[in-house]
Image 1 (cartoon, rainbow, N blue to C red):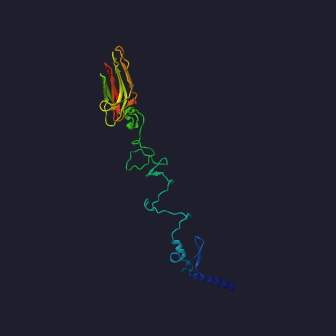
Image 2: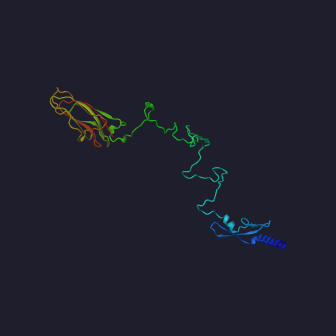
Image 3: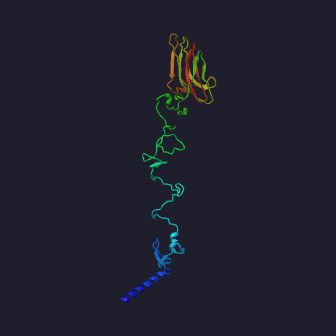
Length: 287
């Protein structure tokens, strides 16, 4: 029995002595790659073995711990973000299509859990989101003519019409037809490089007993349509009796051009006959 106690005491002393000199025995550990690393150690005051990490800057474990975290896809665990000053300290921006809790927005609780809706006028302090245009927004257009003053005016630009006679935004001009002699009468004078679009004509031709009085329309240059080009046939030819009624002509007036001149040309009326009396009006656009 005494021999067993002596053996135990001897083994205890040897073990204690081994811990006391642990600083001389490198402690092997495996790093993240599975390689074996030796770390320094020494005997602590309580007789235990103390591993040197921060104290011994030359130890491999100290080097591994203080090294930068390598890039990779492995998850290293939960990481907290310092938000000592929200919005300033470690400001974090959400990626695209990230969900957020919008139970409150701008300090205001939302009843729908989506966004706070406001119909108040836009002000510097109004931070609520709006899901639709505000009632007082100038972008709201109410269509329909409840009253003329409340209707939405729509103006179509004049250049949106191929035919200027069709455009309601272009004022039409008119010229009287008052011809009592056989001659060339200028109805629309030349004006620069413009074209004369005739929108309609209405006139009467009084009968003649000797020679039929007639009229045709033409265009040409100069004050009396030099080098004329006929725009119509002859109206009124063949009426040789004073007993015949007036010849009435209404041509156009439906909002379209009935004939037009070339650019830089005017429009004239060529009358013929003995006793002539042709009266009427012509409407046109010159541009």
